[in-house]
Amino acid sequence: MSDKKQQRGAPPTKGGRVSGERATSAAFDTWLERKLHDMFDSVANEPIPDDLLKVIAELDKTEKAEKK
Image 1 (spheres, rainbow, N blue to C red):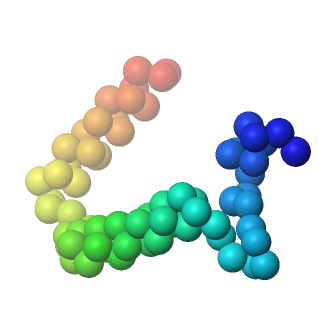
Image 2 (cartoon, rainbow, N blue to C red):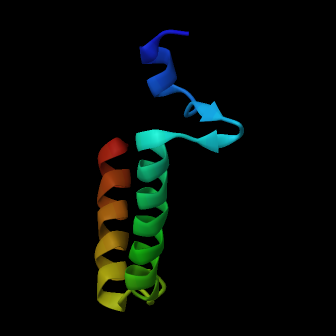
């Protein structure tokens, strides 16, 4: 398999373990994902303010009217 195909596909393994730089990268990706969830999940779960919902509804009406 060429080096380019290995880079795009699954990480190379040795005995079922991810090796070298890819293992470090995978560990960092997992750490980053967890930290971002810790920081922002509560924000993402907040209700959308009514004023913003009204703006979105108006934009939807405008888009539908323009399509006709």
